[in-house]
Length: 235
Image (cartoon, rainbow, N blue to C red; front, side, top):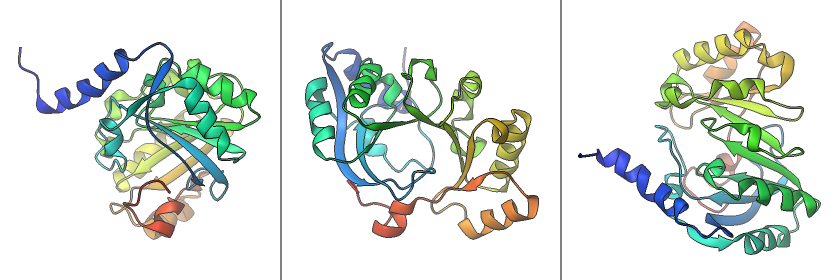
């Protein structure tokens, strides 16, 4: 049976994940910078970017993580992350929940005295996230092209300190997200972030809509892109 080039491109890194030794994760990069998004924006933060993703959002700015990664022993990952000295550590991707050792990685980072965030595309059950780790749940809008992948049960698994992010490409995405947040009573339970997709939606326009409608959400711009530009890596 023939498979499309798109599906084949997704399978290759996932097969690499499946072939990892039980002690290893597939890592794209580890670096210290500032947190560019969420309520933690502006804080010094170490990023552990895992490789491999099962989604292909139209606005993705880390497509290099789909296929670029190397196996790293979990001891090495923890050592390199703690060595940066930042109090805040985020595990991101790619899709970090694809990694079998993701929960253990988080537990070790917590044991190292770090505050831990995980940013996930929302297609996998966040029940695997250890207690004490804060989830940034990226709910996929229709404009992302990946709305079908949303695991909506995750909205009912959110805990104190977790946040929900909607990346918006248009007015239609805004209305869809506003309706979902209202229907699920998300502002009553968690922080809701409305993020304009870089180059697709003007932040000023989104701000105007939010003010006109009195939306109980926070504007979430990608601070790192305003500082270093949209394409610079490792910042």
